Image (cartoon, rainbow, N blue to C red; front, side):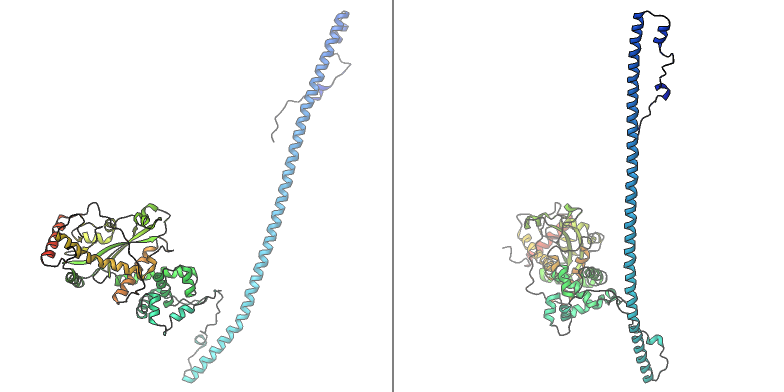
Amino acid sequence: MEIGSFTFLSPEDFSYNNNSSNFSWFQDMENGFNGNANKRGRKDSEESLVNEELKKSGFSDILSSILLLDEAANQEEHQWFTDTDQEKAFFEANYKENVQEMNGFFDQLQNHYSEMDELNNPRNKRARKSSLVAASAAAVASGSDNVGPSQSGSGSGQQRRLWVKDRSKDWWDKCNHPDFPDEEFKRAFRMSKATFNMVCEELEPVVMKKNTMLRDAIPVRQRVAVCIWRLATGEPLRMVSKRFGLGISTCHKLVLEVCTAIKTVLMPKFVRWPDENKMKRIKEEFESTTGIPKVGGSMYTTHVPIIAPKISVAAYFNKKHTERNQKSSYSITLQGVVDQKGVFTDVCIGWPGSMSDDQVLEKSAFYQRATGGLLQDVWVVGSKGYPLMDWVLVPYAHQNLTWAQHAFNEKIGEIEKVAKEAFARLKQRWSCLQKRTEVKLQELPVVLGACCVLHNICEMRNEEMDPELKFELFDDEAIPENNLRSMSSVQARDHIAHNLLHHGLGGTGFL
């Protein structure tokens, strides 16, 4: 509180002396004023005295108020210091109490570890002693005398101190048993035991972990099984945890680790563009079944549903799927080229679901390689959603088609069907692609790439599909605005259509 400064009167200003000659009316009496003048002077003097007394009382009130305010400010300041000291004392007492409790806790913890060490020391000594005796006996039996304590003391004397929740692994132990029926194994993992063993052998150098003093590492077969079962069934992680007797976070980590290993190790081996000899066989196979020459693959683009992302929501919004499902749908695209057997030879994963098929194609690395001269004298057949280019062959999309054009569309549809059926088998075999998963958007391309690799392995090893696994493939085909990109390709398509009709290869579906 701030108090303003005032000019105070000195004590002399308030002293009055009756014997002094400070008042003018005494002087008037001595000078001989008349009676009336004396009366008026006396009256004026009395009024002056009254005024002086009023002034004195006013200054006294002001002084008293100032003193009271000063006293109140001092009391308030004293009370503030008193409260501060009390709070400080309270905090100090609380801090000392907490320190004492923590010291007591650490003392108890140290005592506990000391007791554990005391218990473990006799066990370690007994283990070392027994191993030393066994090693000595073996050395004596073999006639060698070079067995030292360092070799015999390598027994597992250290005890695990990390607490691990005890979960049941009965289901996996049953599936992993050699006597487990192959049909049931295939129904659970979408592949036979032989194929599963091959995958484990390929991934073992990358996936295998070493045991530690805290816990034993999860075996390679169980790691791979967790990932494949999760991809095959699409079940949530809590169900995977119950099946394999592992923690939910551990299962999620294993799925991503194994998928990354599959994409890193197996994708270069099982998903690659055909060499010259293999491409020649693919062309011959397609031409023998459809009559269209120089076809090196069939291309298709599908959508995989995802949870609505936190950023760029509009880019992943799938309008057609939203209209079909009557609820907001979001997706990413998976473009693939397959050979005559439905094996992927190229994949492009991860572009937003709002993009059309031709936009996804133009963004892919396959498009860059093709325009750079990779596809020389090779056709890649696509649906009406792709443009007609020097290396992309698509059906006629306009109205009022001729017989030759009808015949061409019928045969080109057979090649399109190869890719569409391959994608249908992909989603049938790996059910995680049919619904939204718990995988983050940035991690999803790795999972999709692993599914494509495992699909190729199953197709190459002639793994038959379970007839109960059925899935209706639904993807939209929007005709691009500029669907004719090359006049030479237009002439080549017309020439193929003419040859199909006049050589009796057009079929009768258009009649």
